[in-house]
Image 1 (cartoon, one colour):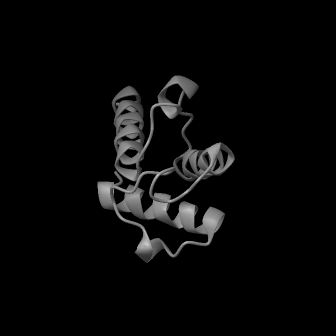
Image 2: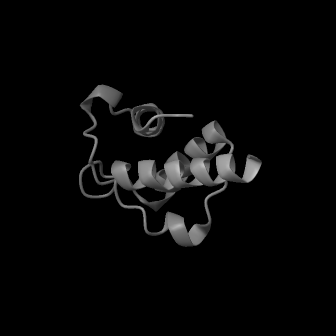
Image 3: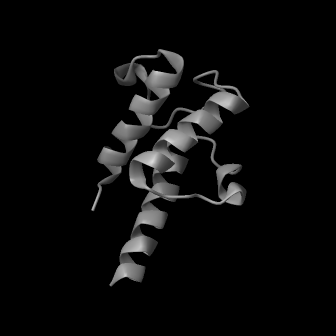
Length: 88
């Protein structure tokens, strides 16, 4: 199972790839728009990268409520836990 730190690191790496911002310069609680200056297309690209990395598909209703890296970590953890429970 992935830890919150593993997921957070993956998200930061994806943001870095999309924006050029160094992963180490991104705060754990950074807001995509306000702190990182991401537009809708960049946020979608990060979301797709993270979904691909964890082989998940997050419903659009949940994606539109994600504002920060920590929000994303929580959503990914919930989906990974649900998948693990379903597989048991």
